[in-house]
Structures are given as C-alpha cells and as structure tokens.
Length: 594
Image (cartoon, rainbow, N blue to C red; front, top):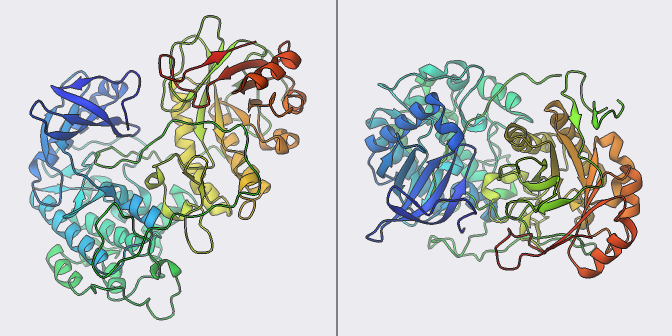
C-alpha cells in the first residue's frame, strides 16, 4: 500500500516505501535503510505521543521486544521511544496473518496446523524465557512466514520488572483470546495466561470459530470467565489439548515443555472430526497460491462467488485498508458501562437515542460541499461540509461527515474481522462484491450484528473523538445486491444499532443511497442523506422529500451533474467528483459544482 497524503518520507534515517497497516494507536510503514535492508516501522500517532502513560507503555514494548530473540518472533532492529513521535523498527517478515489466512482460505489442517502449534509453543518459550508475558496472542498477531509462524505486537506485554500500568475502567486485550485472569486480575497475569490464549487461538485455527463468542465484548468476557469453551469441530488429539489449555485455573494448564511434546502427536494429514461433532469447516480447505502448501494438501484457491440480482449504480472506489501484515499494533479495548424531538436551530435529540444521549447537530442545508473519502485535501474556498474517510482528520472550520464501510470489508482487510462474520455461500466460500473486491459482512443474526456493530462503534467513537459531527455508514444497500442471502430488515437492524450508538455520542447519521429504504429513515434513526448519482438515476426527489432537502449529492458523470443541477441546484448540495474520489493533485482528480 502506497504512502498516504501527509505521511512522512522518512523516519529515523529509514526511507518509507509504503504503509503496511494502521491501527488506533499508530501506523506501520515498510521502510528501507541506506544499505537496502527492509524493516517494519511502527510510528505512534501524534496525539498519543503526548500521553506520558502511553509513551511509557511504548518504551516497555520496545524493551520487551529487545529482550525476546528467537526464530519465531520479529526482532527489533532500531527504535527511538523518546522521539517527538516515538517509533520502532523490527525485522520485516513477509507473510500473511493467521486471521487473514483463515478468513480467506479456511481453517488449517494436518501439517499446517501441527507446524503452527509447535511454532507458537517455541515462540512462547522464547518470550517467557525473557521474562515477558505477551498478553495479546491472537490470530492477527501471528504472521505465517515461509519458515514458520512469527509472534508480533508486544504493545501490551508485561515484564516482571516493568512499571505496572493501568487505565481506569479499561481492560487491555482482545476478549475472545484473553484469559480469565486478564479480566479479573489484570496486574497479576503470568505465563499461564498466554497458554490459555494459545488454546483459543489453536481452536480458531482448526475450525475458524472462537471457543468463546458472545454477542458483545461483555458477554464474551463472561464466557471466558465462567463458561465451558465451544470445541465443536475440533478433532482429537487437539481437542483434549485445547481443553487443558483453556482450564479456568492457571495452575491446571500444561507447561510449555509438555505442550511441545503432546502437540507432536498432531497428525501430518487431515484428521477426522471428533465423534458426534459436525462442522464442514474442518473438511474443506482453500489454500492461497501465494503461500507455501504442505505436500499433503494440494488444493487450488477458490474465491467465493457472489449473487448479483441487479447491477449496483452509484458505487465508487474507496480507500483500500490493507490488513496488518508484517506489522505491530497496540490493541486496546475499553469496556465500560453502556447507557441503557423536534428540530431547533439544526440541533435535535434523535428519537432513537436514550434520554441521556448528547444533542445531535445536523449539517447546514444547500451549501457548497466536497466528497473526499478517497483522500483528504484542503477544501475549495466556500465549502461548508466535507465527507472524509474515518482514517483522516476532519477539515478545519467545516461540518465534517465521517465515512465508514459498515456492511462490507475494505479490500484486503478481511483479517481485521473474525472469519465467521464474513458472509459465506453454501460451499463456505466467502461472498465478495466483485465490483470492489470486498467481502460482504454476515448480518443475518442478531448475535453477529451485535459483534459487527461493536467493531463499527469503535470507529464511530474515533470519529467523534476527532471532531466529526456525523457519520456516513457506507454500503447500506448491500442487501439489494445479495438478496439470496440478505434482507432489508437485517440491514435496517444493523443500521439502527449504529444510529443509537452514534446519537449517544452526539453524532448525526447519514443514509447512504438506498432509495428503497427512505420511508424507514425515521424508525432507523437516519438524520440526513448522502446520495451518489441521484441525478443520473432520477432519485434526488425521493431523498429530498424524505430528508426535508437535507441531502448531499455526489455525481460522477457530466450527464448526472447536469440533471442534478438543472432540477435541484436551488435546494440540494451538489458536487461532481471522479469515480475514485482521489485527493487533489493526484492523477485522475476531478471536481465540479453547479
């Protein structure tokens, strides 16, 4: 992935070649030294560099990685935790994350699973020998290199001589892969905590499912602490090994030396499913041709098909968010209690929000606006409203709308999502929107919608924290293109959950396209509209009526702009952009107004 506008050209003497990934706490770049050596450089976001507790945690991360040196980790080669923007360079490891592999290719079988299990045990052995507890062993923190797995991201690791850090009201980690003691006594975790996480990770690798999988982080945490793990589809002998790793009592879990011995009993070829257990996920496997394939497993990759019941219009290129590959990122989940009108001066209390929610401010009507979701740049003179990607900062002095991909997955970012949240066809192939090469999210059950919303809500929180006044959940109309699987009611149900959360944060919600559902906009909690090509397709009137002219139109053709301007220039906000909505100064950039 190429560098984004505003990215530095170099860090600490390393030339930056491109982005490997980004997260809430920082960006990871592919760098190159003067001698040509490639490194992965993690750079902390500027706002966190001013937080002394975070800076201390980053220093501890650097120290932890330096203490660990083994064949199954990515060693640090350079760092400056005291720089204005702290950074750390590690060895660049070519490979995909385990989460990406399972999401796209399915669960691991036979020799692949055995090699992963043994490699992770050896990695934890090296980590623990250095006096470090990783505390965030999960599929996205495991790189699958040609010569074995690598454990990355020591952002929340703990060494026995580290300063004890906590944040009031926050649990640091990823609930489905945390140990019970991480919830109940986070300061007192030991190496046995990583063994518990290893058990969860191996179940996921073998089945594509998590042994603890609640409909929210809260319920998942409850299951981790009190419930028996779901081991459906896990074949022996791994099933018995996982049960011991997932014991609630840290003292009852096996030591790494014993684990290394018993994991050698895993078969080199695919094993049958445990008696009485049915799960087709362990009987089929599609292997990417871009990674080594064991000799006993030679099948071709098949990319999931889609059901195209009608041709979508008004869809545009969006910024590509590549999954974190050879990267390190700090993962922080804040678990806090959830708080269980009429228009006036453009501010109102949404009917979908609880009484405790913040007031929502609508965008001004019929003003100059700009659509910048493919790359931010300084808005033209007179622009009052701007829509940008949630990755970018809002435009100063404007009313800003934050664009998030809510019903599909950005190209290459499947590994950011749990594999069971990706929609699959009857053959368990991931369903893709082929026009944009985006996996479709599975919104068919309430439990899955809640889990999807939990992730999307973190993006909404980030938008609010940056100063955005509204969100634009994209691909609301996905159900129209995949009617074989999805329904309008499912789309509305997810959108309503997002609207309630956004309104609690004082953030307005835009309906994106989807003329089929304008009549439901009030019950779903949608406040205004962002519409693509309503001039081209003669739909502007439907949105103007439903949203009282609070509509922002983007056209992509001369005909569409002409139609929109001739009929709606006196009431709606209209702009024409290039199909990829690239930033100004980039090849292909185009912008016109009425």
